[in-house]
Length: 165
Image 1: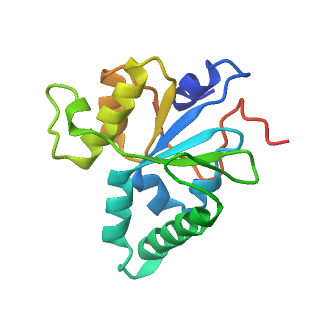
Image 2: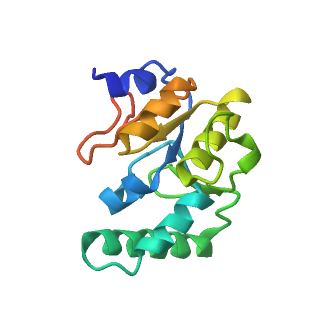
């Protein structure tokens, strides 16, 4: 087990997990939006705004941003992203609005990353298990400093305790 997998592996196997995904992951791998079977995937409004800024770029980054935007738009035909939409794998995708007031003291509330951290921190403080998934090292370090589980994302890596069958 790697250090990055520690938090997920220590969660009870019977519990449904919530993963809050960062823009860096979606731009790195457009398929990451489908990579959390039988769990909840939280996408914040900040992430949607950041995807919007990348959609016009040429190359893989722009392609990935456009793919995720189109995919989420297509899901709207099946229900409300605010309430959460279950996809074939049993994963539920939900869009949540973060509040600048939840950004912990010492962090700049104008930073999108810090607003995502603040939202994860608020959910964590409310007793909900949320794992932040990001390619950004500093983002993971900040989360760890606040007691929020955070992990790197690897294309070919599925958390050890996620049953794919």
